[in-house]
Image (cartoon, rainbow, N blue to C red; front, side, top):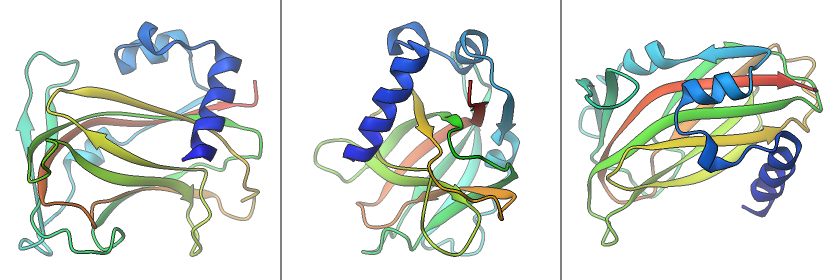
Length: 193
């Protein structure tokens, strides 16, 4: 957690981005144009959860009053004890270089949870697409019942020149059963400037 916070503070001080200034992904794009943008929104809505319906199911739902019209609703029925046991992944042709600045951005909220505090959570990793678990950024996220724009800045410190692909992983195990929604998933590569 400390590592993510330090990288976040470093990137924020470089870009002078105040969280209060950006309320939508569209505002993020306008304020800080990225060199490359990977939009996984359609892939997110197309996730196939039919393999283990007793563990996780997904469906596309309509949304009103937000800067998007549809979201993916995930029902994590049996999370189990292993955080890595249930996941979805998004791959992209994105060759990051050491020193590049990036941002993950998406919307999410909780619908139902057995957590006594009314929150649900998951872990995400964004990493080169290879077998080991070195990553550009990892975060544990907790959601409330209100839609939130999640923006996670990072700086690339891993030399993965031999790996032309990246993968964004969401892990849903190791928590209480819960149901939540996600929308408008995008990855921004700002390069070194």
